[in-house]
Length: 391
Image (cartoon, rainbow, N blue to C red; front, side):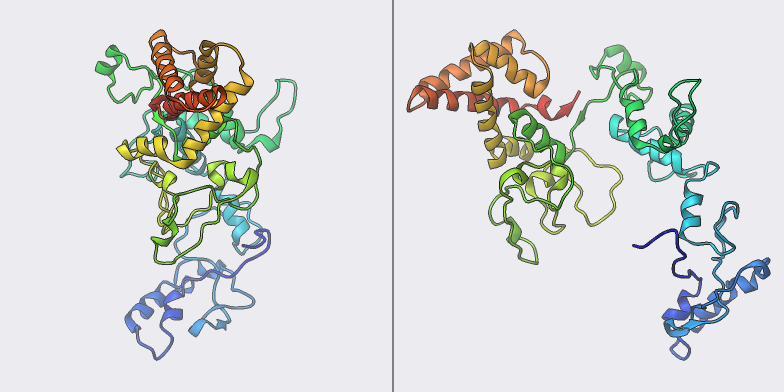
């Protein structure tokens, strides 16, 4: 934390001196560290000593410790002063001649939309990683990402649009490659079984947070509120007692109960079950790519989790309140809300049979029977694989 425009704490290679003060052992390691000091390296006479001193023996400040870290290859151009600080590091990271930053960023964004980056080893762009499948595309996207957008040839470019992730997302999702169908074809399966050439779109299951979000959106319960502290959506009783530290989970009331999954409070030892079952990262290690599994627990969660049962009841109430008319019309609207398409004739027939059976089985008045019948239909739709899959 802090202001990156101001010089920060001095960085020196004298860590072994801090760990092993004089007289406390570690002589060999300390001697090796002293040999690597900048003053013993060629060109050290041009390095700038810290006016206040650097970290020295026992963590105390001592005069004359140089700030330049040995072995760091960087260009001294466009630096704030002779001394290198956090602002210089930031400028070096986003420098136009830095070959990695823009490529890594656009590759990560591409990976989110296609399930696989242009460089499949998103953590390794070196000699041990895989080469890019489309190197020219990677370079072009990186250049577009770094360059400011131009509204028209006669208008000057807007510097604020350089390094704009929003513009990068728009560029990818409006491309013809992204908008392809993910339907498998026999001819493509023979030529490119892994779809590395992207002759079609990849079919991907949604991330854990988005699985709950799409159900909230279809039911009409999703809160569009942005920002704020984390929230506590409902979860099974007793989950927080399973970890080493016993915690209390107080379910958020009102609108916060239906916030997007990204705002859910995350305990590393006891993550929310509805997130963990859909492969949300555990929070203990850095995660650059989420693995996608397919287990019976996922279907059972969508069918029996009390959150999703609440969403199904809300979807049923929405269909009855907002779309008066025939059952066929409501089925069309239900498919539109959940799957963004119209039902096929056989799908319409099977769901109509389910609805009729629930209406005959239900107890109470006509309104109660309608609610229960359409809740059963909503539970089927929310439990479909197509509901939680990006086609």
